[in-house]
Each structure stands twice: as structure tokens, then as C-alpha cells.
Length: 299
Image (cartoon, rainbow, N blue to C red; front, top):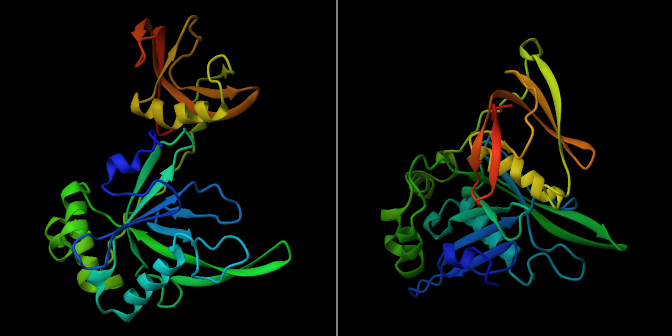
């Protein structure tokens, strides 16, 4: 799978599955790292990141009847059991592998890194961070795990490839290159988990500031699929610091115009224009546009 980013980004990473594990190659027989991959779109298994607390809810890989809880193809549930046993016993925490959490963006095989995760959370009591749930599908009952991790606050320190290489080839010396938040977790367990917390931002728009309202129509001529439009709003416009380029005519849009983004006849997003200008602009693909609307990205 040439478009798969993982094996290019992370040495030795598997190309498929929700659990993508790498066993160390230093004779330690320990897992070097685990990738947790999610779409966050499975209704039956709703993986979820609560950004305000850093708590990440992740479901195991026994998702169909016919197998016992830990006898799965990728051995993901066995990894969860072993990991949380180590956490709750409080011994040999250095044997717990780091968990790197990635989310599919909905745009091909593109992925978004959500963060470095540790099992458990200081606010979740022992025994409640890995629970067994029962499902009934096609009149068959089976069990799966629901696990709680915490996305760690690694500050400005990136996840270095040197650390990942140490995890694979020299596990006993890997902490020299690990982020401080991971070192604290390995030393003190759940009590020293430092969560990455993102304060909830209010998307409320002050009605008093709105000067006018406009509809900005988009269709399959501008974006072939709704997922392309969604990616443009959530990613491309953020990278452009809120700029939306228009091809021809410019809307009459004074400052603080509330814009309703329409795709195929339905309102999909809103934003407030803080500036606009008609001038020649070339986008990232070399296409020429007539000007731009600048949106407040917080709206």
C-alpha cells in the first residue's frame, strides 16, 4: 500500500488494523510501541477523545461473535489486558509500551496524530479503566474490551525517531530520549499522568456584532465529494489562516458578515468574515483566483 503513511513515518509499523504493534528487536521480547488507529466513526464501537480532559476511550478488537475475548487476530485485546495488568499491579511499568494514537481524516489514507497515550487516568479508579462489555449480534453474545487511555501533554517536545529506534533496538536505554511526561508515567504510574487538556472553545457568535448574512454555495463542481468539502473547511482553511479564495465575482460582504457555507443545498458550516479583498491570488496547486475572504477561524 504505497499511500499508507505509517511505515514511512514510524519504523517497522504494520499497515493494517486498529492495533499496529512492533516487537522489539533487542532480545527483550517486549513491545516497542503500539499504534492505536481509529476512524471514530463506528457506531457500534464509538472510540472517543474528550479533549477537555485528555481521556481517550478505545474499544478492543473482538468485534464479531465466534472468538473468546483475547483470542483475536491482531492480539489487540491481549495487549490491553497485559498492559492494564501491569498498570494496576504497579510493577514493571517500564514494560508498558507507549501508545501512539492516530485518526483517519476521511481523506484517503491521510492520518492525524492525536498524541502519545498512557493507559489509565488518575481520575479513573483501578478496575474501571479496562472493562468488559457484552454485545449481541445475529443472536450471538460475545465480549469485548472498552479501555481508557490518557493523551499526555508532551509540551513542545516532538516524538523523536531516535526514541522510537531505541524502543525497538535498545529498550533498556529508551527513556533517555522519551518525553518528560512519559518518563514521569513510567516512574510513578497513573498518579503522575499529565494529560493534554484543551479548554472547550465556545463557538457562540455574538449576534450584536453581525452586520449581514450571506450564503456561500459550493457544489460538485467545486468539491467532488462532501468529504472533500469537509476536509477543506477543517484543514485547508485553517492552514490558510482562515482565507477562502473566490474565483470570479466578489460578494458584498462588510466586516463581520456571517457566512453560511452551503454544499449541495445544505448548510454545512458557518463563519464570520473579518476582511476581504479583490486581488490576484495563486493557490497551492497553481490555480488563479480573483480574491479572498478572510474568516475568523475561531468561528
